[in-house]
Image 1 (cartoon, rainbow, N blue to C red):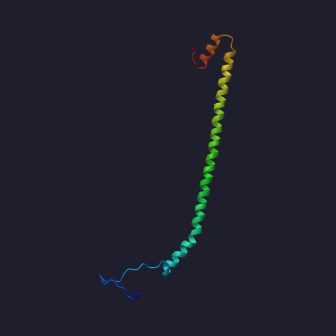
Image 2 (spheres, helix red, strand yellow):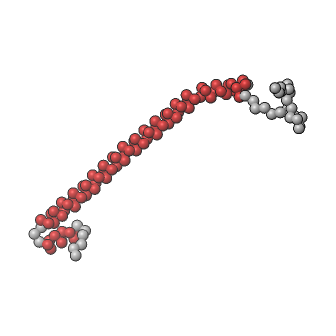
Image 3 (cartoon, rainbow, N blue to C red):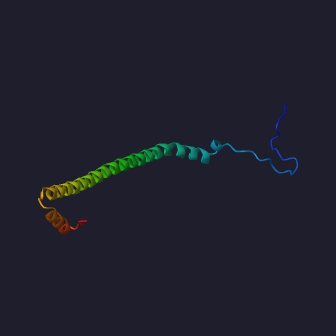
Amino acid sequence: MVTEPANPQDTKTGRPAWRPTRLHASVRGRLLGLLLLAATPVVMLALAGTYAGFRGTIAQAHRDLGMERDLLLRRIVGRLDMADAMLRVLVALPDAGLACTALTTMGSRCG
């Protein structure tokens, strides 16, 4: 069994050999460990709040998108209904020349 001397030295340089220190061995290390332990719930609460805010923002974006979609759909349906009504009125006219004149005044061209 090999025993280490009280002051181990590097055999080549004569300087003390480097040893990794234990983090919890010093008061500073213990305080750092307690600080990390105490900060963990705070960090978790902050992350949970951020995630909840993110999910809320995504849900609001979905609601806004649905409202925009519905408004656009209503506008398109209204325009299609108006065009359908205009075509029905033109079909009801007895004279083709009268229908062509009505289309021309509405901005269309007869061929």
